[in-house]
Image (cartoon, rainbow over all chains, first blue to last red; front, side, top):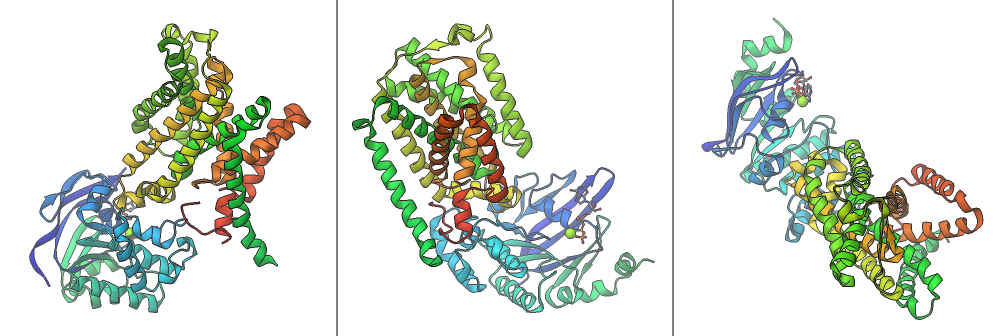
Length: 235
Length: 317
Ligand SMILES: Nc1ncnc2c1ncn2[C@@H]1O[C@H](COP(=O)(O)OP(=O)(O)OP(=O)(O)O)[C@@H](O)[C@H]1O
Ligand SMILES: [Mg+2]
């Protein structure tokens, strides 16, 4: 499904926290319809990059384009409305809101109720729709946070370690959901530590180390790249 | 046995509420002025707790300077009555409007800062307003420390005004709680950053609801001012109004529709009883109620009942 121009372009983005250069001039793009893996050692800036894309953190430098439009510096709600959705490394749902309320929040209209029901049905949470989200298991909360993002009808979905800490069954379910949505035309940028997940599900991989892109290519190419091996295992 | 008991609670509660509304709505027909005045005070607190809850209960931004809006409303409407010879309803609404305008001005800068800072800033603003009201710049308008007497309306008129306002606030809360705005504000309370990532314009929601809350508080203040016949800075900006509003809203249920009613009615009853029997110990009893609350049901009766599954987890209760 890789066609057309890039859906996301990241140009030389920079972000420091005090003396820590979390993003030290990093750039790449994601094509419409791709599933791209974003990997790198702990602390390499992956989550920070997500936070800057969705407007949680102001950039120190660089530009971010979504479907050719400069979205740098826009507040998060506007970026969300343009069609970029993200999930968090540590799942963040609204605990004292029902599942249905959690899912309808992003749309702001009652007509979306039907879609919310469909999605809850789809991930097998429909029976719990009137219970508080705090009652859900960890894996269920993950699913909930993903369908929440889907209610934005996003073109681009950023997932921060979706498979971490969930059961193998739930992991399989999540990956099926991702591929199903991808066939439906949605683009994914996925941070993931589990190499099997990355190698088996991503068409292309971008590798960060110390806030810079050190490699990019197909899973096989990246796996053989000296720079990647050095970043992960030392010289 | 336990099952029937659980089912009885919502039914008894609903019947109690209906009975209360009917009695309160017709009270001037059969109550003595003294008894009516007590009921007036309870309804006044329903309004205050309801107005406080409207913003703080839903958003989690605890407003410790709430009396700012009550006091400004008092001054706004009393000046309207005394200097501009306004009618009863225009005068009350002027009070609400003054508070709403001030809330709109301070809301945008204040609501960008989180939690404790917001609470402290509001507290400081309320204190500041009390002082500012009596400075020479405003004395021509406010009569400074000398205060302003006001004569407007009969007891029955004032009673119906506060009753109507209480009903309006509860209905507005019902409408609001079920709307997208209400849900958004609850989401802000639960996780503000996550809400903004899900397309919620958090600033707009916070500021607009803050303004409505201030409008209700100001209108209630105006009615109370005519009930008291006299206002001066210390009485108008009495921190007691903030404290009671918070305790009552917390007791009944934060971010619920009926919590303010339950909190104000229950605590006002306790307070009247304790006042009668223990005099000044009144405030100590409130302190104890507060401590018990924080320990056993930090979000109030209704929230606890929802969590226990006795009431449905809907936003319309
Ligand atoms: N809000 C913050 N304040 C200060 N430092 C931060 C902040 N966020 C991230 N950092 C620092 O920036 C660097 C990059 O962090 P980031 O969370 O982006 O890494 P990551 O690639 O997501 O790592 P992980 O795989 O462990 O999740 C780290 O050194 C981190 O300590
Ligand atoms: Mg991370």
